[in-house]
Length: 179
Image (cartoon, rainbow, N blue to C red):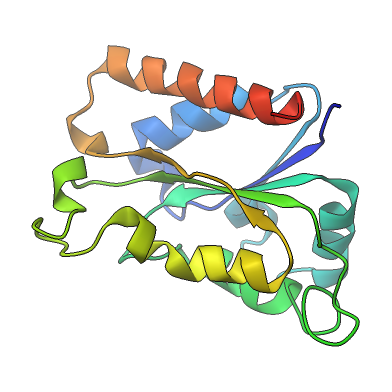
């Protein structure tokens, strides 16, 4: 069964990110996919809660696509989560509107994969660092999918950037297909 996918893209400095620009380009215009550049949509950082909640209700899969900034999301995506996933809508008494939806974190990191291990310089695994995203999904009754992570993006060649963009497009296409 086909799914509708909502990609919430948050990058405050897209002009400095070859990989995120390529990922964005790879999925724009795909059938069954709604792509929202939150920094483009909300340059004043004032999120339209009603519009965002309506979009969530219209989609089966939510993708949080962003660079992994200081072990979290860029400010606007965090603000989006804070105001859109509100009590009574997404969780708490009567907050069952998102139950059964699926969530994918699509992330890029500057550091290499080995940095995100217990013995690496970040001291924690990506799974551990992504616990707040997983818990947010759980609290809202959503299924948190295996994240799509690209490590060491600063060292990628142009060819590798395009390979990753195609992998991302394939992952999004699989979500649209219901996988």
